[in-house]
Figure 1 (tube, rainbow, N blue to C red):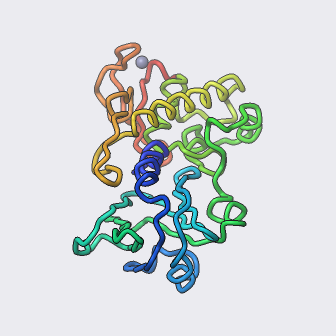
Figure 2 (cartoon, rainbow, N blue to C red; figure 1 turned 180 degrees about the horizontal axis):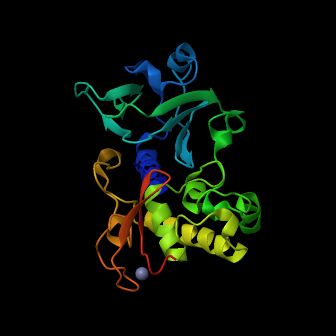
Figure 3 (spheres, helix red, strand yellow; figure 1 turned 90 degrees about the vertical axis):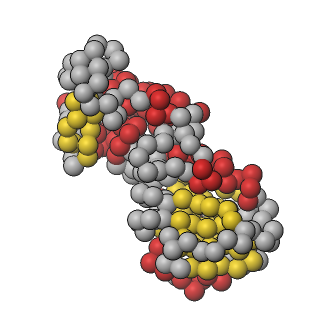
Length: 269
Ligand SMILES: [Zn+2]
């Protein structure tokens, strides 16, 4: 599943290739992925130019002249830029561009979503108004205050994108290992200093992963065949049975809120 660093890689890959392209036509092959009015979605972008591409959390935002197209890749979504090749059955949405190329949204699992919203107001409405700040923009004390009474495990809270965005399963495990915090500890039992250390660790882990283009594990690669290199830096995630890089104790795999979770039982009490 693409997480923040992988989504950032997708944005950085698409941006130089698509800025200033005008959308000349649109084909929706899997209508259920479109979450706003489908006739507006299909017609309003036509004639508009892609002015910028950026992201908030894991949402990718194509800024057009008067509207934005917002995609979420969920489990397996990716983009391809193609010219005349025939359509693949996993391509669910196609933008025809003024250069003659097409931008194709491809998704084996069909969990991805697309929204079209006015550029003036999109930040104030769903889905983007549900996205909390990223670790680098999170106020440390305010975050502690927001979570300190929760009886949920810290891993569940870190995965909650409304409180802080950008950490998925891989980077939560790496963050909690770096902060030496067990993922099942309840937020209510954490001291402020421990919460601060978690957010600082999250900033470091994500910054490093972004710099390396994200993590390429299992089936996910970003669009256009770009592979991340952060998988070489993983300390605990996917490392069950291997020695902890700090203390040598074998890493174990447990389940926390239904998610496979990797911990060093000695470093993370
Ligand atoms: Zn250890």
